Amino acid sequence: MDPNQPVTENYANPKTCFFHVLFKAAALAFYILSALFIDNFVIIFVVTVLLAALDFWVVKNVSGRILVGLRWWNEINDLGESVWKFECLDQESLARMNKKDSWLFWWTLYLTAVAWIVLGIFSLIRLQADYLLVIGVCVTLSVANIVGFTKCKKDAKKQFQQFASQTLASRFSSTLSSAFSVV
Image 1: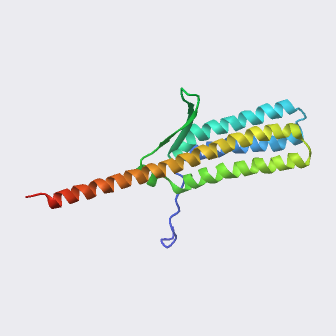
Image 2 (image 1 turned 135 degrees about the horizontal axis):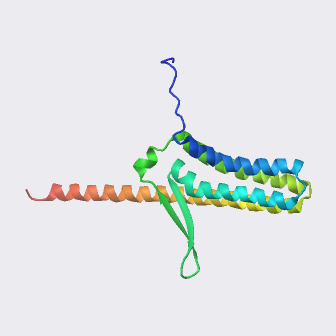
Image 3 (image 1 turned 90 degrees about the horizontal axis):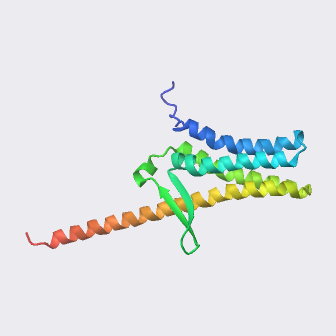
């Protein structure tokens, strides 16, 4: 190996990365290829939505937690209001997250939604309203994960900023009190 060549970072969680991409690719590939080989809309709908739902679950509950250290869910409180809940690793652990894993997570999350939207445009052009239903479900699941993880990432940054400002204020006040204390 050439010592002048930069060391490239590998995926820290290759199995998780594989499954993160697998269900996205499977849902898209099945939907695209089924139009060529299957003439039954119900089968196309059920299998595509099942694969998209598996992708949604894997991203939300497994790959999001492992690849970027984030997890989200939504609850309905006693007043019937929707409440978003977020979990994230501490800042030190987040800073150690693998950059390639994180890059793969975010790019595939966005690119999948874009791919479904493009397929939706094609269905509109071809006047296939029934296939828009399949695409609508898949876009909804993709966008739900994008919104959930984006809100979770923003919440993690806000928590870190609050922690940092509280720590700084506490250290400043303890330094100030020790400076003015009588020895």
